[in-house]
Length: 165
Ligand code: S3P
Image (cartoon, rainbow, N blue to C red; front, side, top):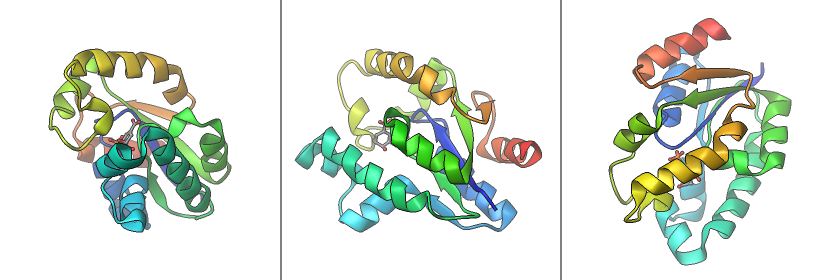
């Protein structure tokens, strides 16, 4: 059975939804950021701070190359996974890609907690989100299915995914 791969901007609910989908379908669940943290022994924000974003992207790429070889698994990715085309090629080979979207306003609300997302730990958070969102919008569209999660709970998104697949 193919993997179910959740992609999408920060704050679209990839991790919460992924866990619920895996539970409902009785499949294993992997959260790529969690796996990176477990394997490096460092929080994502520490990796960014100590070694920089490029280094984080290399680790992410390496973990994706392994995770993409799984089968039957629900995989929640980090929001920047779409930045490397090879990540997407690998994930697509073995999985169905589901893109979770949300409006800018909702993303700003959902990502308001500080200290978790290094890319958004800045003074001009709204501007940063808008810029990243614009730069990446077309990349998130390259999915098999797209769901607007703006007014849905992770439970509702889970039900939608189960109906879709
Ligand atoms: C990132 C998203 C984060 C995490 C890292 C970079 C991004 O994951 O991988 O902070 O570039 O969008 P979430 O989407 O789970 O917040």
